[in-house]
Image (tube, rainbow, N blue to C red; front, side, top):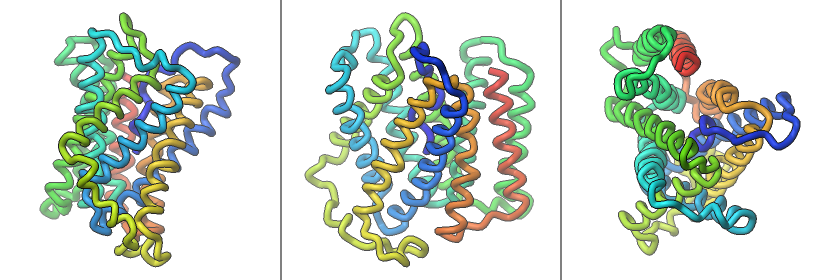
Length: 319
């Protein structure tokens, strides 16, 4: 899931930007995130709990980013007292519950539909800007909202009595709300007067999420033995892959690598361009899930998904 740094400012460019390289890096990152959705769902369908999967991902991400920053930029660990509210909101709500509700959503819905629900977060942000912060937003926000709602109605096939799992839909909408907090709190943390860089903000977000899970479900109770079991659902199970190999894929290819790619891309293209290309993730995820897990969407649902993405793009551009 592309929720690490795609909308946070990347800071001033210290070199001559290469847009082609930037776009290439973002596309590769989107492929990594999209593939990770199927890998994560394989873990969930094999009996691994969403809470434990979320704990494993955020803790591993914190350790990887934290070690890199400790070796290259120790000053990133210094935090002013006034920064804590935004960082805590970013980590506790934005990171923790985006991850958890995302995993709970994809375990109950087709991956592409869960992602479409989560990707409506920019519309929530735009509405908050309008009604919560009383800031001007373009007319495109309203057109984007109408398109997104219409697209979601097609995806859910409401005329046939709502064919989607209600709990999965609630988790997807909840993930979108948590992701909206991620965007808003992250934007506050990197803006004046704090001006903290996006990498250290992300590191602290994962650190706070990891601390939350360590308290709620201590590491000595972690089901390490389950990682030795083979995957038990169709698709990846045919290869007999053990769960630990899927977990490593999720941590390295699905988290660390795309994070590094997106941060690198921000040195060549701006954050809005990264975010726009990142919207290909649900499309790529749908293709990968269809090939590996056999998840098939109807033509109406595919059309609805296109409307949702178009609406989100309009809302984000207008904001």
